[in-house]
Image (cartoon, rainbow, N blue to C red; front, side, top):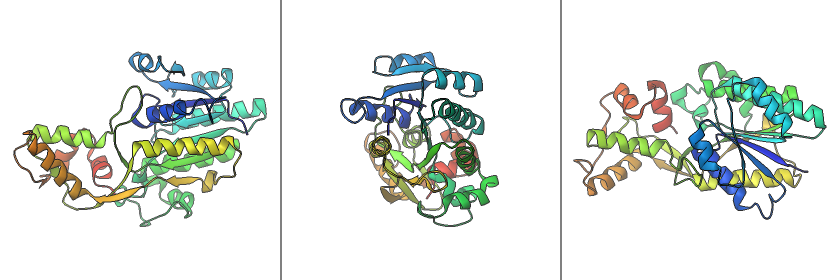
Length: 304
């Protein structure tokens, strides 16, 4: 099976940039016939990727006509969407355009959607407890789609894939750590935000409930995407669509252990006043410190 042109959205981001680097790292073997199209938002991001062996494109993914025009003119047969997991309009534009391309060429096309394990966290009103990617994830998400935007979009993706006949995969990374390998953003949003908050208050705060953090290194996640693309190119039969949910967890560590270690290291460098962590005085303070709405603070920094 042949993939010739891959559009990577969010290509300047932490995950997207690392995926681009992973593909380029194997450009002379398994991906020798593949052309990467890297979608970014700003001129600065475009400039940072311009030195790579990729076709950089800057356009608004919410512009249906622009998306369709680019995908059709450039014979895009695979999309890796890292741009958003909370916008059905963008997702719809990408999948519908890929469907038009499939109808035009008669070839099988592929859509890979990066979402997140917060969809299955009690902080986001997930009602079904622990779930594995071998369970009927689509049915469970569909039943609780109205209570969390990520589940709503995940469900929407599967339904759009059905209606267009596109083979699709939903990838669920956990909290990521490690330095990315992309050309622009190489830092996870989680840990740097905690460091900035600690330096602001001169102490490390943690949430009252000591929950386990599901983790993976960003390089392992990028390698998974590379292996998935390789399997597609080799024509392997892979669970997709309603059954194409992939959880990328490599290890589990209690959040309090993470925060205590962070406090020790920052204190040793003289950046905070105490070597131990304390409980956030309020959820509102926590959310303000990391720059997200209250409803997302727990799901990003205290999720299972």
